[in-house]
Image 1: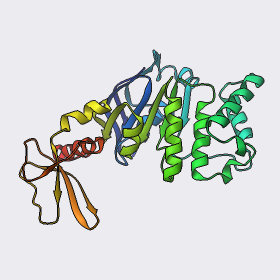
Image 2: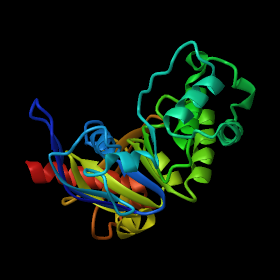
Image 3: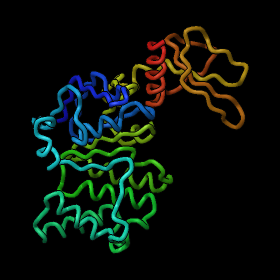
Image 4: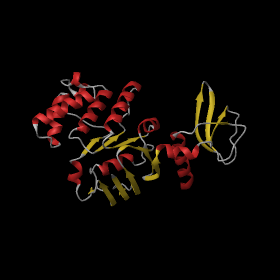
Length: 289
């Protein structure tokens, strides 16, 4: 279990990246959802022991991450948002090199694990191809493979589906579902659909704070019966309505909004995680005004 209490981090330029952040996450897929600049990457880098917080407590399975970072790294798999590779090394050779760095020293076991990970990530046929020439989706699958080296108990994935086409994105989704069954996978993204499809637990971040966290379905439930649709430019939203989103569908303006009381002149909609996400962000903006 990952436990974070009152975590704070301010960068030298004065940016308060994390502000009194509290978080609890158990086994399975846990989603960190927030807009760009919300503090997701700062939080993941801190959990991965790549930077020290100014204050606060971090523990994973009883290990104090601030006092024993090396112990955490022995059971950590990490895929940053952007990662570099040695351009002239093959996929297999690079996995071999990284496995040794992660302490997988027994040669037979190391090669068996690499073979299993190549198969799991559908990269066996490309094992001798240089990673620098991989497509975006193949690079992400390689990133997952290297994160799984050493059978880590904690895996951190920062925007893993960014830039992927729909087919590669779905393939990566299927892969992540399989690897999250026996460990904690922290998935950071600003793509709501990724969280909704993959994560049973979610936290919404903004301005370095957790706005809300909990079971994904439980976060959606309070909005059921309170999300409404307004069609057309002439539709005026009622008083006390909170606009969630505005989109055009076949040239017609569609507005989704939140309103506590029944509205006979508007169509009720099934609430989604995206509705809860937009509602939390809007309420946070109003509180800051």
